Image (tube, rainbow over the protein chains, first blue to last red):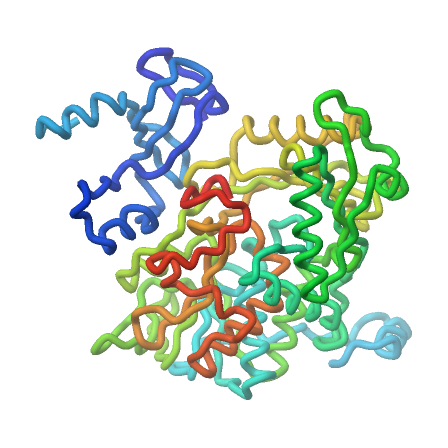
Length: 95
Length: 416
């Protein structure tokens, strides 16, 4: 499996660390309800198929990346900078 | 047919002509008292103990492929009960005791070999941690011995004791641990369950879980609808997929774990040994191949195959501990899909849906748990209350904070 890092080009997956599903969004502030925190911390869709996930290029540019990957085949269909994804979420644009 | 020395001799004289199939390859009936989804070790053990301990025999085990084609045939066959937390200790010790009596109980040669499990330590801090774990085990009546360097040398003299980075300082030994022939566990439980009237239905994939008024009434399968009062999921690796058929989201991620076998060699190591400074565990099969493994690959996967970065990491761990491995050739390797739970511990519990039961989240420690998981899951299905040895394995523990985090890694499944 190779991940095409937007900064470093295609690199071996051994250079990256995995965090997990990129979909959960941390509930905001002290008003967050325990049920919402439980869902955020523990529950996952865990799909067999397309999965949007967070990887960290620790042995390269040290950027956080959002990777679109199929969990059945390991095929990677898209990589973007997690920063860009987060900024576009804030401005309401689609990443 | 009961297996014995006499039956073996008798068949030898008759040219091995009269052996019968070990279990009935049943066609599904329209209705059962209980349907167990998943014909792996856990599902078959559950069916066996439902019949044996609770007298419930109108049971089907549904397997999407053939019996034993999943993780029960993909593990490194290690059994042990060297856990340190209160929620785990009684459960894994029950499993160990069931292993010890398994072959007599089910009249099947599962090649239970109590060759010992030796966890090596490489630093003072690790020695303290192992002493604590060993003491927790001994307080629960489980055998554990803390060995110094010379004690380890007496068992595995060939490892690199003076490795510059990870010198071997000693080990924690559980002599009652060891290995069990994994396929024979599936076959033996299948035969024993079938003998007691359980239907084992192969090539029968569950495609839906039918509910009426919030209660399970049966399962849709590739071989038609099967009505059942109770449906029990025992499908490690695919748990989230089955649960989603009942609109449940679970604290589980599916990850791939790779395992390896070398070419066959003469007797080389007569125990199970684990490297404490990396993640590497090894034993030798009766055929002579070294069976070993390491960490999961660390990303969500349903592919049953992994990547080279992990293979390299496992080999490096092996070579750091045991340079003598270097001349061995790798014969084959494979992957299995693990139910990685959020605290590294399993779930044996009812679900919010009446009649739907869950046995899941085994991470990569499900094989050693097979007998006790079947025993405790059967108890739950039959009586609707948790067995006391599995009382901590609740689905709701993540919401209430009663986690069982043996490794102290937090809610990060790929680190457990």
